[in-house]
Amino acid sequence: MKEKKGFKFKKIPAAKVFKRYSAYVYMTAAVVTVAVMAISIYSINQTDDISLPEISVPSIQLPDISDTPVVNNPTDIPADVTPAPEYYAPVSGDIVTAHSVTELVFSPTMQDYRTHTGVDIAAEKGTSVVSYTDGTVSAVYSDAFYGTVVEVTHANNVVTVYANLEELLPEGISVGSTVKAGQEIGTVGTTAIIESATVPHLHFEVKIGERNVNPQIYLDKVK
Image 1 (cartoon, one colour):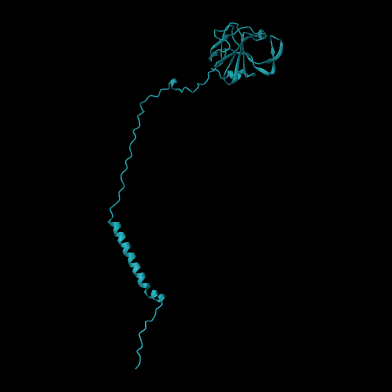
Image 2 (image 1 turned 180 degrees about the vertical axis):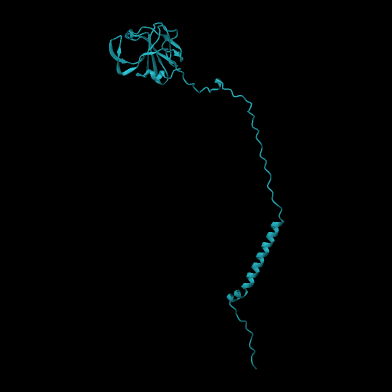
């Protein structure tokens, strides 16, 4: 009696199985993707519109200044602002002898040639002499050559010298006194022996510290 041969399953490699069914896998994935997209689009269309809340900007009411008058009041100047200084000619008159320190000038009194450290301003005897600008009286003395002299120290180490004054000075004019621009500090005299041959005048000098400078530069600033 012959034995029946048994049924045997043939083994198929996994690579061949994947290759055989990969088309179905890809097709299934594509169908799922399309379905998900369709559902998403439908959900978006069914979503209510999103509206942002309204933001109101408060209005600012500016004051009406069109009818407000503008007043320039001197009292409106801040306390820490110093007014510009004022300048006055120490006396009104013509300059009869100019300042000269580089060239010698003839002195009719001394009958020789010498330098002249100030300017001589002609004026009648007794004419008021005023301070060039604000300052402090720093010296009062009688000079053998220039007669009665008053010196006033101003800002920036500027010193003005008033010589050939009458001996009697106004009340309050002494060393340490504060003087304002245009305040009388003396009167024109004839006390300067070295310039006695010249018409009555004020001998006026300007110094920066101890160095004489041309007074004309400062006289050009006066009112």
